[in-house]
Each structure stands twice: as C-alpha cells, then as structure tokens.
Image 1: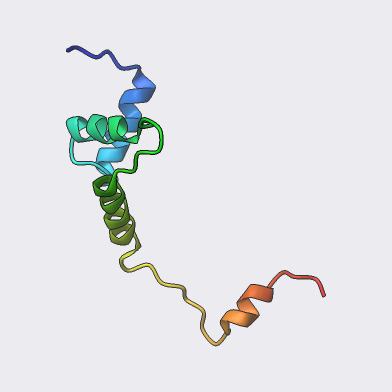
Image 2: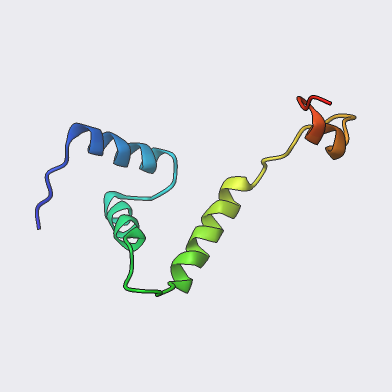
Length: 81
C-alpha cells in the first residue's frame, strides 16, 4: 500500500520520532491505528499497558522543585482570600 503524506503530516511523524514517542514511521502508523475507536466497549489492556509504560518513561527524572514551600502553600499560590 502506498500512502502520500502532506508536508505537515511528515513533520508530525518526524517530530514524534525525534521526540522518542515512536521509533519509526511503521510504529507511528501502528500506534495511530491502535488509537482508533474500537467496537462497542472493547478495552485493549495491552495498549493501555503500553500507554502507561510510555507515561512512566516520560516522567522519569521529572521532579517538582519546591524549595521550602509546602504542598499546601503551593496549592494556595495565586488564590485570593
């Protein structure tokens, strides 16, 4: 099957590969097809596990630098009393 992509679509795919979201064009297409709606009420546990693993990988090393501010104080920053 031949697929003709617009320049914008090519940039999106190339960006996803550079960002490490997918490893190849084939993986991008496979991921996109899996994201399409499934028949009524079906749940793809494997796809959900892959999504969770990707989120956890993206979160590695991400921390909240809060210094001496408590979480309670952070939650109220910007609130008007």
